Amino acid sequence: MENHELIKRLGRVAVLLGGDSAERPVSLKSGKAVLQALRQAGVNAEPLDPAEEGLVRLAAGRFDRAFIVLHGRGGEDGTMQGALQTLGIPYTGSGVLGSALAMDKLRSKRLWQAEGLPTAPYALARHREDLAAAAEQVGFPMIVKPSREGSSIGMSRVENLSELERAWSEASRLDEQVLLERWIDGPEYTAAVLDGRVLPLIRLETPNVFYDYEAKYESNTTRYHCPCGLDEAREAELASLCRQAFEAVDGSGWGRVDLMLDGDGQPWLLEVNTVPGMTDHSLVPMAAEAEGLDFQALVLRILAATLEVQR
Image (spheres, rainbow, N blue to C red):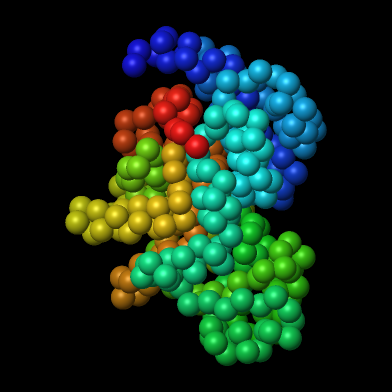
């Protein structure tokens, strides 16, 4: 389809950004980048921040479709997807179920286990009284994480029970579901998924303890390797695993799957992101560029998928 014809068919587009989750600052930055790219391509795109405007303008604005760039709860967990579906507005990315499942790391892991896909051993600690038994089950070192937060918010690596109690207290302020997950010592990779295809894998390297919020969005010492350094057969094998993981949680459109390799080369799935970052540090645009898609072409591809999806 020629670009001018595509632009015409896309109509009036709401770029949903900001929101009220813990990831609001990143969403604002991602959303502004998407908005600028769409406008430069000639798309009639308008920013809309649900935290400031609610859904009133969305419902009354006669928008033809929505580009969701809301990270975290309220935008990436099926809530906004359900609202858009009710309003009859086509939207980018995964549907209600896929968004909800991917946002919940506990449910994702349970689904992967049911499908026979590898994910790190873990325990759920809803209460402080659960910690000793959960620690014995998982073993130290471990990583503590809120089940339904993104951008590594609230995550900590812990070495003993005392550190665990402090990390759990921090994570439990964000989510009543706190995961204790076995620490995987090895390289981390990420796989961007676009229209059912896995783009070239990226290997992440950081001097931080792990790929945390600072490493993702603020640090200039994080290194991104694409090509990722694996041989072709091994990369294809991991790409296939990531595609299976994405489909298992009912992901669709676009997204990102994170995994790690341990010292024996065994892969362990970490999580799925259904609205990944779109900042200058973000991974999906990096993988797309390696595939020959610049940022503008990428956002148009993501948005164009709304012309075909039937929900």
